[in-house]
Length: 276
Image (cartoon, rainbow, N blue to C red; front, side, top):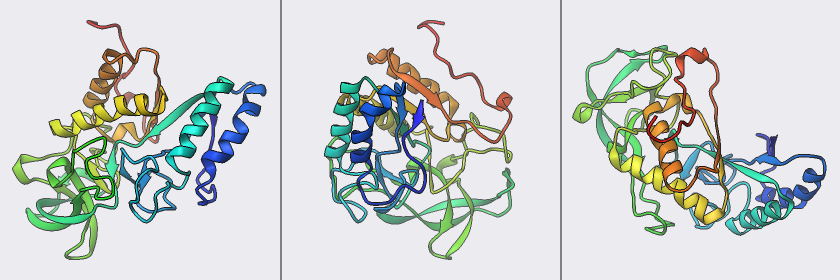
């Protein structure tokens, strides 16, 4: 598999077009699979997509300063898909499911501060912060999904807008906690960055599963790289894989990014036949 991008690709919104022009030649060289960048709307027009804002905006809606993503418009993406299909090259989508960035408004919620080097250690009494947790997606509205996000759909953040203080904050309101089904680096590595998505919330699980089905139907892409998989619930990852299989996705190709810690800290996520 060839990586079809790198961090410093020019932010000219033309990258889907560049790949469209190159894909037939890559196939001649023997490349049959290409990992493409996160194509969902990012926090700003130059964002690489790991600063993800809206899963359902593939460069179609005027949000966060532009209609296109850094990589191009949805129309450009679909042209790339058509060219890849014509050439016989499988495109692998980079799915950023761990967090969300660039919320539309702040909310207040009850948190504790935790030791950044050991997130199992609480170093403050509970207190309220003002955090960027409100996602209303005003440019997209209810197109494709009516799900909106608020503090209840997250488990932590690293910025208190009221005090203008950076720290690792765990939400404790309504009994919230980090997921325990994550990597044990730093005690508990559920929190990585931005607004940390909480997969214990049923609305989150259903929305993300719906999104994967929608992505396959909307773009015809059936290969996916799960970004930062050690930072969110392994239980949900297995649930997601089962959902893909049961919704007609046994032919999907899936890989996951795990870095920086021993493999023993990450349970097996491979597919098994139904019932096993």
